[in-house]
Length: 260
Image (cartoon, rainbow, N blue to C red; front, side):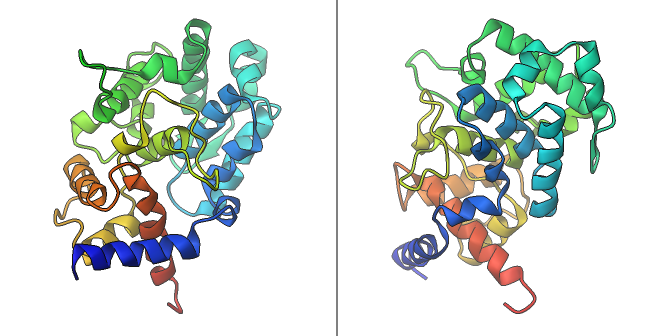
């Protein structure tokens, strides 16, 4: 299959699967419950961190957490005291527990005391003012790894590309926050990073279809594979390569169904 044929296949999948209806059954529906940018950042971060396993469970557990925050995550994070935070102690999602959530919330409280947005705390530029997505993912990792509130065990959920991790959940979170599109599925809140600089979240569905199409040769799902897939997608669309995440994911999900 030629590159042009691969692009046509993915463009057809985009036309079929990618629209506002995608939101309802995806974890991105969680930040879509809010309009204030800080609420979107916080709700989106937790929804992304919870995003492994069944999507319905991810959504339900995210709603559970937000209910404990009185459906006002920014106000909760910035104003919470010991009494308020006690509501988080019994939270659990897979290997994510109340201790993990408490540490992240306390760290976010510290971040928002110094910055208007999480974006302001993250952005790393080189001398030419070019954003490096790898550096910014690592900066997000460090914000929590260096926090006195975050337990070592929590960091299994907040990966770094410098540890060769694919950082699927954080890469997805960056896509939510950065990318702009006509359907307004992603938010486009963060403007320092451009859509062309994003990478593709390498989940099992995306990785399988990417390999079947010859867009990814590397066998390991690590950061090197993320960069390899990103390079292939940029040959199809320089300015918005990660729109094809929706096509790859949807094709993979559809083909994994019992009757596919």
